[in-house]
Image 1 (cartoon, rainbow, N blue to C red):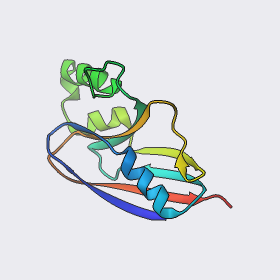
Image 2 (cartoon, rainbow, N blue to C red):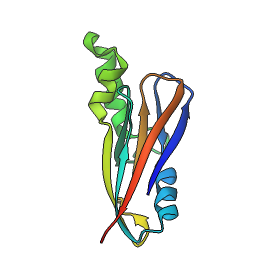
Image 3 (cartoon, rainbow, N blue to C red):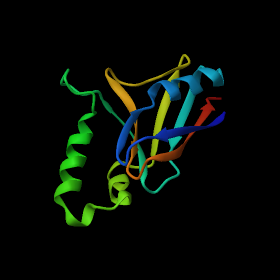
Image 4 (spheres, helix red, strand yellow):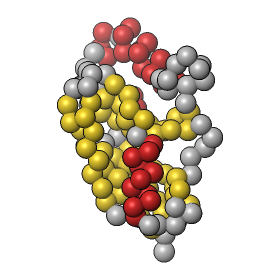
Length: 129
């Protein structure tokens, strides 16, 4: 099952937790066991799986701190495409018993580096044989 999720970003740089959206696609597919492929077809946006922020006062994933530091310090890192290259356009997951097999505290984040705008997030669920 293929689904194009259209996201509307509101800031130039933004991180969106898309875990519930991808979980919904897996549920809609009806697959009990599947490979789940998530792809961002933009050169200036990306997708990433990581643990939630450890600090209760921060809702940002840990990678945000590193990206902010690297992108602000480097003169050559000022284009949106460079930020996206640090993260990656694709993630591959496994669904078992109709649920994503994420580790404890893991979430799936969409990274926008050139908003605000509408972006596509492609999700392909391939059931096991």
